[in-house]
Length: 92
Image (cartoon, rainbow, N blue to C red; front, top):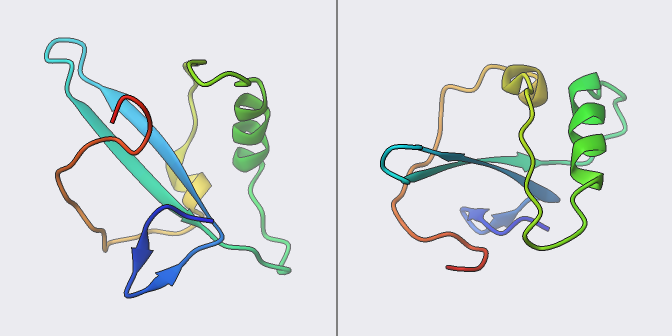
């Protein structure tokens, strides 16, 4: 399940995309909530993401990849939540 909740509702999953500023070492994390559906409108972009993610088998594994986030989300979102905090993975 997802790490975060909205109004007490938890999603089926949550994908995190971590971005690091090379100069300041600051991080920005984009989280996308995942749902399960029988509609069959999955994106080929998710196949690419799953292929890349399956190669990350150790806690400290990292990769660089190019993905189209608008295709991953499959719709235009204009609402978002923002907060400052620490990572939810070590080192927190």
